[in-house]
Image (cartoon, rainbow, N blue to C red):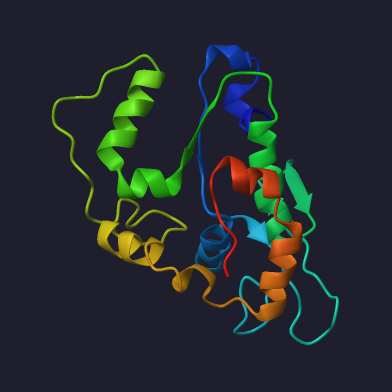
Length: 190
């Protein structure tokens, strides 16, 4: 978000083209279990994404995201964070490009070419997919996937909801923004 970036202060939103990556909410929440970055929420042992408690009926887990020492956001749950973050980019009055992570993963050359064209550029003649872990050695990215692992994870429907309890799935179905799901052609698990 423009307001979250100190270097962006004073830059009119119409002078840039934000390119926003959106991810399937179920795989995104699972990913947040592995790498929560600056998001903080209570997680019960062996239960993640921990949308609702396994032990206390009706107990939900709010999420705080601490961007820096002066800027934090609060969300009703991990689902709420996904909703709030993506709604904030959908509901703007300036141009932006939203790209599904899964499209970039499975069709990298085609999607990159379209992004370049949309931004007024051209793709280079040689397109290479980074097969190794592009974030290896970077702070906060220990254990991230390489290209092969990512394709295997995101193409496996059963891994999409791995770790979710029946109550987590029910809560997610009730609270995920269905307009976002439809707009980006994501489906609810069976």
